[in-house]
Image (cartoon, rainbow, N blue to C red; front, side):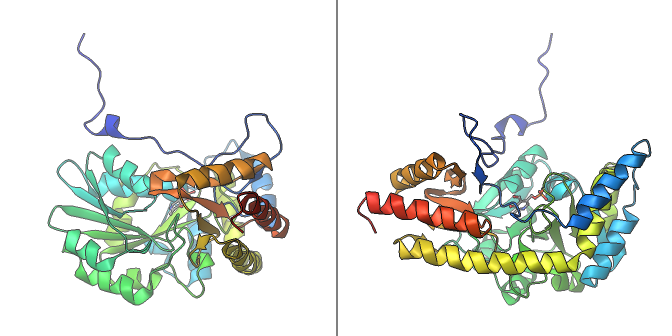
Length: 363
Ligand SMILES: Cc1ncc(COP(=O)(O)O)c(C=O)c1O
């Protein structure tokens, strides 16, 4: 019998590794490994989710009209330019499948989110990593790397796991400098945490070759429901609507996301709490002698002297039931990415790291 093989490239994929959610001994944990919202979703979103339990025999809306209207009203956008997906992960995959294939190149940055590489490989395209400069996206390097084989350029802004931020004028320069026929995808999974940033929406609206991705998994606290959205030019929206599943979002997910989007007070509160405790945590870690860039997201990247110290710090946190994220696969074997938790969570991280550093005679 001939072997049954997947498409070229599929078996080259190194599967995505998520943040740890449990300890082997089953102790209660403080999970700071997946950039989840410590305050959870809006109470209105929870209620909307539960209300949908009364009509689960019905198919969900295939056009996501109510959710797109809520997004459009909240962000001042055209609902016809919005497509919703099962997390931004689904939209990343759909963009790769629709626009890249064998012989094509998908660019991502050196420390970029793993799903860009996986999406490209799954589509049979070749992912290519472009160096960053001091943990920041390097616009000139991206422009220099793009050629007529480049179909998509993915950038997360703010970056994950760096937390660094590219100013809107640099994004505009990047869009302008890429070759014709190449789509620039601005992944704004953490956009709400960056002061005054629109996620790239204005650039999308002004051009025909830029797409913005957003998620309900971070500031809206709905990672468990899998809802994301894209804003794009009409021709990209048309393509995504052709290739997506007709009912790609469940009715509880649609209802909860709509309520979450409309609860702007909750979002503002989450943003303010995150900003406050992000600054506090970064200062506390710097005070212990760790290297921490200013973060524009809901996590900080703490850099240690070397990979061995990061391993020991991770173990010290785990001993206290705290799960941070190793980011070796993102090019930072010497670092831990730590989600900004609530006040108590941040204090626990700082106290544990203080004990760790003083035991090593480092602070
Ligand atoms: C930069 C970035 N993009 C996209 C995602 C995926 O988000 P979603 O939960 O919407 O699939 C994440 C999740 O961690 C992320 O960090």
